[in-house]
Image (cartoon, rainbow over all chains, first blue to last red):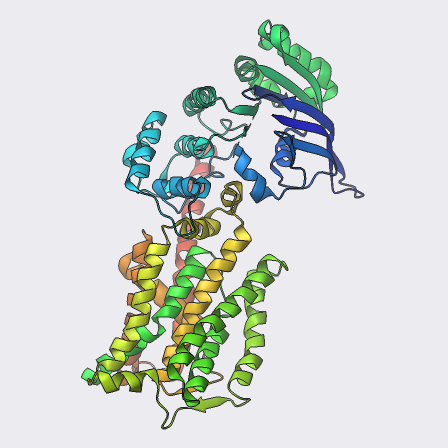
Length: 268
Length: 300
């Protein structure tokens, strides 16, 4: 279980560019829960992920994972608990390494008892092929090709596979389909849902797509001004359509809403 | 003629570990390690000084940890102290000038006159004019095989990914600083070992004998890539060794034909390296300029 307690983060404090990105944010995510997060640009959504992942230190507050305080743990140490996908499909893979080498790196890194000089075996390669076949993108026959040659959708699918090769305690998806063409986006979304459901991973997904926000998962946060201003779940959420969520968002986010690209998403 | 070919091969293999070191630091880790020149002399100084004192084998062996030390210092300056990698290399290189003089007993050169080197020792058991070549070829071939195997290990993959996409590497619970340290430690050890071999082979070390080694090694790397391509790690490694040998043949050719004055060879080498690195960049720029042109036409 992830518990976030009153975390705050101000960037560039004391300057004209001072920006309060997180303002006493608190919530807890139960094991297996799938939370979607919406909010206008600058609401603090990505900053929240950065704080949880340890990309920067928070100013105050606590982050607990399964009862352990990880607030001060360095990023590369805590990242083994997390899987994280970004909007940029290039972010999650090493382009100069082959598909097999990307998978090997993650597999060996997480393998118990693997030494610095461990290498993958034949069985591992077979497992890679099976997992890649499940993505349905024909990548299973391209193990020896550099990842830099893949399309954005293929790279994002591979990133998803890398992030869940060992089911993480928390999967953070930061608009991971936003930069893809509509077809790839819906395919990646389907893959995400099936992988998350099958392995029971706790997942938080940031999205700008209202439809996605209500259709996916079992809980929705609305963020504004560095705070979670609405937390919708259960009966209330089941009865909610895009129109209701949009209305709620409009009311709660106030003036931010008008000049936001959320308007575009609404029309889709 | 045979002697010319043999000498070119000897120097090609002798300097090949520096090209392999550059393959690791420059191509894999994306760090231009400018401490290479000084590190090469350090290896030579340790090796020749020890040989002069009657311990040629120990001299070769000690050059390896000496090089590793240089790699660790360069890496710490970059990762822990936040000094940009190019500047860190220059700082270490400058410091090494004093260190190298110190290793050489505050003299600017050390020569082996009657003292044994690993080459004279080897010649006693392997009577052949090719014995030096065999000895010199052992090091790069061993290093190349080791590197090839290393690159697909967990550590090797981590080092490679660090040069490729550090964000992804950190997200995979890998400390990128430790990977830079590992890579530079290995590359510097190779450079120093090359210096150690060349020093004993030429029976001399001079404080300035490292000048231009890094640029020459880059040229070798680029020649190798031109011949074999850059597609795979195996080709990159083989290319470094082959490029180093081709470079020495070009050198021998220029030396004996006087096509270009030998004094101008460093100028020529630098021009080749600059051009080889610039051409892909210029090609890319031209391609993107062409794209803009098309867009402008469409707008009009």
